[in-house]
Length: 191
Image (cartoon, rainbow, N blue to C red):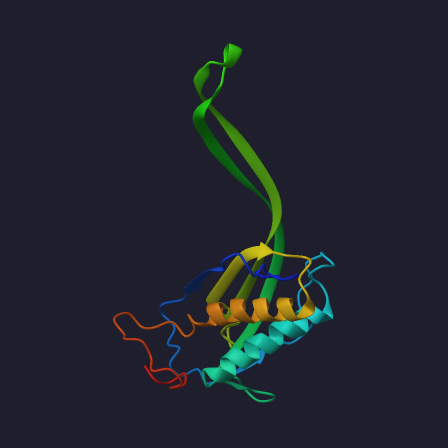
């Protein structure tokens, strides 16, 4: 989540989606980015044009692969935006140690103990929002979270971000209750 200061290549990406079940997504074919500058987070690791360009490029590519068209002018069917965040996390693991070892004056003794390991890391989050253009209310949200590796190369950052966006947009559009999976490449209107 991304974020991709670059989501770590070795950690998994956790994805979830939520949507307004009263909205019919079957008519969605065109989109536009919410106008104006991207919302600032106050974190210079996230507020930069490199990250913004990578996210927008990945979103546009994945939407195009699903058959959606970017609307440069006119009235798009939906608006899109994203949000990013970084959060410090702790990973605490306790290992129980059982075994035999040397005891008092060389006697073998059974022993038990435990060792606790604490690791600090950054978790990135990427949220992709689909917004109704008329009422400007949220109708769909996809979220990805994963560990961030700040030492990743630009290519690794781009690839990890692309993977996160792809996983997020796998859930868009949401399938109506009881619907079967869409045929790959069938486009947004094929349910």
